[in-house]
Amino acid sequence: MAESGYASPRRVVVTGLGVVSSIGTGAEEFLQGLRSGSSGAKPITVFDVEGFEHANGCEVARFDPERWIRRLAVEQVGRATQYSVAAARMAIDDARLDADELRSGHGVISIGTTDGESRDLDHLVETEITLGPEYMAAEVARRVPAGRLSAAVAQELQLTDVEAVTIPTACAAGNYAIGYGYDAVRSGDAEFALCGGADAMCRKTFSGFYRLGTIAPDRCQPFDVDRKGILTGEGAGVLLLESLDSALERGARIYAEVLGYGLNCDAYHQVAPNQDSVGRAMRLALENAGVKPEQVDLISAHGTGTKANDVTEARAIREVFGPRPPRTISMKSMIGHTMGAASALSAIGCALAITNGFIPPTINHVTTDPECDVDCVPNVAVEADLEIVQNNGLAFGGNNAVVLLGRYHGASA
Image (tube, rainbow, N blue to C red; front, side, top):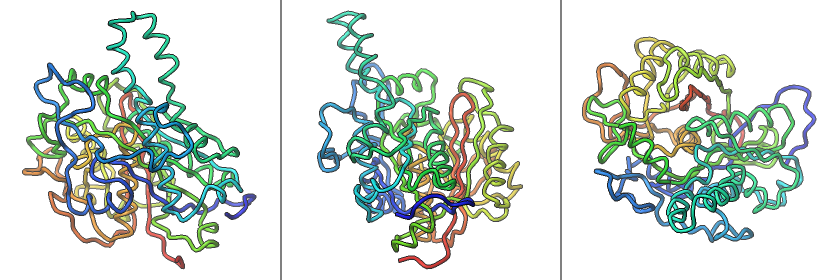
């Protein structure tokens, strides 16, 4: 890969995509799932759901960790870590690179998450009954460090000249991680970045959302007047970023260019979104990318399907983009809310949409809520020539992260 030392900021492009999701593993399966409007919703099986009136979710099916994890002991890493490592290896393979090439330059691994390996808590709660709370506390301290989601990628790929960080900014963490990797490559501090997010389904998170009254009975219906909440999901999305010069030098396929991003944290409320703050995050991203609102062709919304989020986000979008905003979709209608992986998987969906000339649908849609008033591309994908796409990630505590991707025009293999 091209060497660092650039005096001016470098252009950063996406050349590899890795996906673990409920509608497909790998970029090609994920693309097919998005285009066909597939749904990953099904009854939850990964933990005990006795006592819950409804318990649908978007689990990953047909995932073989041993296909992707070849050096680490699979049984000694948690499910979220397995997803993270697998998606990173997929992204490298998709970029037509190998680990030896990555070892020739300094890199960044940035993985966002909500729960880390908190799925282990499901087992530990049961263990406490027989072995007592002191055993459980010790086990939690040893087994639930979120940092392993990025460290395990470095270990599996034997990357020693890397900065491995795990970013725990909840449901916006994937976009945070992309922004972190973008800055490192753009500045010349890193030759590549493996960035995205990962989370596994766990009883703790499902129960928390259930107690908040935000788990939908059977399906997620973002922006619909009859929406009833989220479906929890799981998976990982990892993007390989490198400089444009590096990509051109090796004849890489370029999915999209990272144009910029915006972050803020308003700490307005533990769970309620703040419209003004969401709007500011979008303006920060547009300013950072040097993009005007009228240049954006599509918004991939956070779009959880809850009453509060969808209205607040839609109003913030109209505040920034005017009364006729770009088409605004929610991929969570298909893959559920994958927590720390959410905005990373959506960013991958945006890159695929740009490359393949289509807009993924918002499925399960019947009637748009007048308070939302967006064209959410209901139920069926549409063909579209996309130049610039905005990807929103919003999180509890007012953590907001917005990433802008653009079509790359130029010579590429």
